Length: 91
Image 1 (cartoon, rainbow, N blue to C red):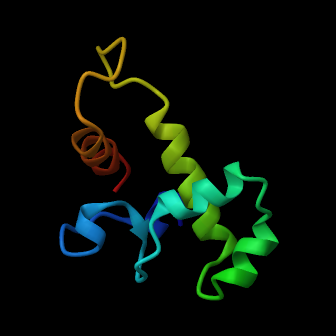
Image 2: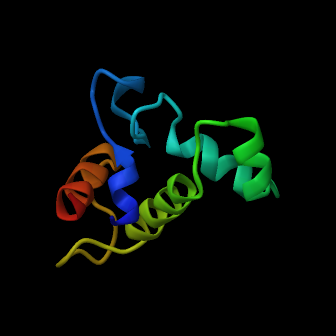
């Protein structure tokens, strides 16, 4: 299973923000906590429904978004369009 299989985009869940599949936990919450010196174990303790694979999937999404689309030198689309395009490539 690829780590991106852990992420879903559904317009009816959290307004279409990327979330951990089967939860309402936005990827942004995971990334924010890691950016604020949160540990993986702290995330797993705070969100018992999370797995290490969920955290890895969140980081993989972030890594993928940091790379430009083919033929684009910079991000020219709005973020939700960009995420939708990138996730279609992964799914």
